[in-house]
Picture 1 (cartoon, protein in one colour):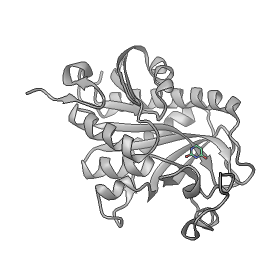
Picture 2: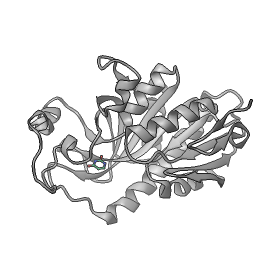
Picture 3: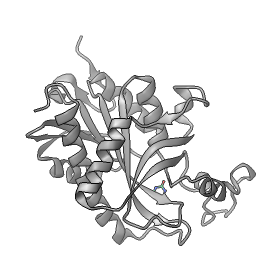
Picture 4: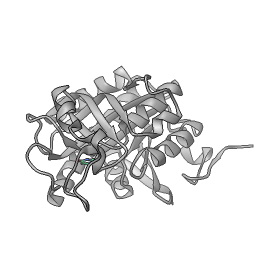
Length: 260
Ligand code: URA
């Protein structure tokens, strides 16, 4: 029997042989990313998972939203792998930890701290969450070609937006002892940014023997402020769409069999 992905509401035929997926968290970002790739059409929209198939000279790219956090991303990756996706690129937003990273800069993750929770269901906690080397190279090249400021390094993936990222502008203003001081510690240890899905993606892709990378636009520098400026979001998203689309085309050209 042909596989039908229940959560994504996609069948193998829908994929038209796509092997590369660009994965934003927000369904509303799918079309913008797909448009940067080429012509596109929406295949499905079930729960947080919107799937848009984009076509360009180099081949096909599936843009699919994961929703926020590891649990829903893990569902998407499981089903996408069964549908034939071999290259997974998270296209997200993040908060910077280091002083020299500006709002609107791009962060490319080489590896991620596994504070996501979900990846513990796929590998023991000592197992590293690493990106695929070629995907990191491709993402860096795309940023260079587009003239965008970018940083390559380690990301902290947190299961929560507030306490796990040591935010105190919350309902109680309290962060449990285990998490107090973690912001400063990650900063000392050279971690670049906080976000909520990269470690899950890297761990699952590795244990599946598939390739993954991640590119995130910086919405806030946590050393300067806590509030995200909604005006910044659109600018960052457009940059990300361009980086993601260019990278997907490079992957199709250089690595995917049948890519033109
Ligand atoms: N996403 C996060 O998880 N954290 C931020 O600070 C910004 C975006």
